[in-house]
Image (tube, rainbow, N blue to C red; front, side):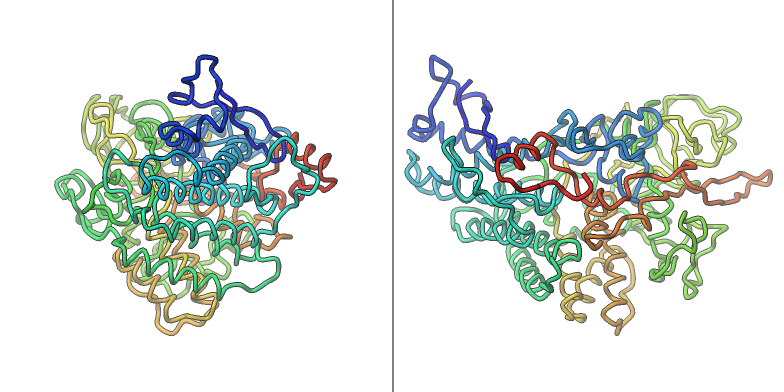
Length: 629
């Protein structure tokens, strides 16, 4: 083991790294020794990468984390394993000393964010401070490595800011043991974002840093495309009601987003716009949308394929993907009965309600979607003439069919059970690879809704967006690497910033590009600013569904004194009854009879771990803890 100073916010400890840094006979190396050797310098840069999270399904115990903690989905582990993250969040079992998000075992980089991200920030800052005088054989390596360290520091700061908010100091130079920590101050949200942008701009100004990675041997390295994506996202967050400190900075957010989007397009990023594997995604057994809808197939293909590193990639939309795989999604985050384990992420009725009908009309009134607090009385959009509550899954946005398994949809895969007579649609059928109707009505023995069974659905729906159409035990296609940043999100960032800044024509054009890719009509012409903002927020909800954005969007759209009662307090399922004549009756109900308790004001932010908050107060004389914790 060797000494590397680690910054756990004003408390210094030791951390370790492996490989080339452990070459000294006594197991220890000084920083001077590390930066006097080219290979050790490169190895130290690697320590700046190790805490990039896998996200996706790789939260503790194979869950989707923030997707399950918003109004997008319900985690079947909440009842089966109530001690895990979702169960604790739903029950409000969280404190600064023991919080399910910050005090968990790290799974593929997800969890223990405070300590791990500050460790990486410390290493990045140490690297930046020494690289100019370090021994590096190739001058272009020196420039690129320095740019990578700046960009990685920006990424970790952006993650801390998303979770913890403005409870951070800005670290331009590495701290040492002799530092007078009492002078360290908490920066505002805007100040931290400007620091993030400053680091990104250093990366963007470095000629040796490429715009994308084009070879597998460099897979996972950061690049200029990521710098623009981070700038786009974080200035949008800074301008949002929760974070803007009462200042209107939408014009700045618009200008930065416009430039970032232009630079990404100029350097080859574009939406994923065609089916590249028609033999799979447009086959008779993919069941992607009515009549093998091409737009549905495009969307599902994109999220179930890992981006290849190439000079001419098929996928030009993904800006940065995780280095870690997602595992066997069909086994832990699909239709649980397929392999007999668990369903994991069950989309909510609230998410299903968000998908428009194919004519572009919202299902519900966007101003007041529900007439009651518990979401049992939908406030239907009177202009919508296609939606039928008695037949709710026809004529919907193509992305609905790519993202959600609903009552009556189909899947061809390996099913590890023989059908029982109670499954009227599927009986008789043996164990094996076959097409099955996904029936979610109450009493269906395999895929029907159930309040506690782990392999069942809690909501009447199953997640499909990240699930290969035919994966299973006999066709083990794992989930694609997680797309941490993609152009579709950046376009919607720009659309929102443009609309908020009053540039409604540009905003509408941007959001209509996303809708056109999805096979949806353009928004009505001439929408006023406030109406357009509502439609853009609705578009984010659908286009970015279950990609970890909704959790943070709901928070940043809130004011500091708000809570999440209107969205996250009551979560709704569709309880379906199969009638004797083969028709169905649809009735909304809450997933369980009690409210979820992770909606109060304090849940807008994650608390600083208690020990760290106490140290900060002791050293600086200031309370750094987030409100309510």
